[in-house]
Image 1 (cartoon, helix red, strand yellow):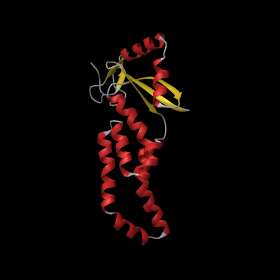
Image 2 (cartoon, one colour; image 1 turned 180 degrees about the vertical axis):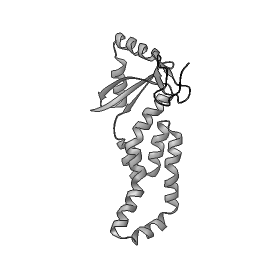
Image 3 (cartoon, one colour; image 1 turned 30 degrees about the vertical axis):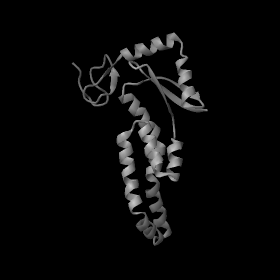
Image 4 (cartoon, helix red, strand yellow; image 1 turned 90 degrees about the vertical axis):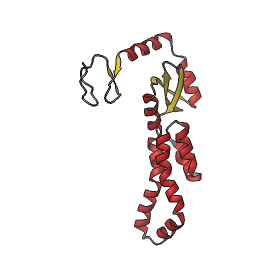
Length: 171
């Protein structure tokens, strides 16, 4: 069982679930096929990140023959460092991929409903939809108690006089 955070968009009434932890799918499949990591990022609506992620691989693909020749002439210690640098983008997507998705949903106005344990994203959404009416009313109250900072766009409590993220002073 995996742990998922389920989001709901208040206006569109749309639910999304994102796994908490390491993003294994893009990490493992990036080894097999380069574009899969980029497609995973695009599917998660992380277009800018996918462009930044894809540029080094295009560059490395163009220089692959030269890189193999360089790697063959390295000492064992330098070769390990070379491999670490080469695999860094894959590790970055594995460790930060799901967090990027969480941040993206928050920016788009989605709110966290619940964190649930489920086998798949779809089953996590179904579990979260089965909330009691009381829980949803509590959730709506929490949303109303927050306001958005005009400087950094972070959510802060409605009664706050100063933003805790950027120190903006509210009127």
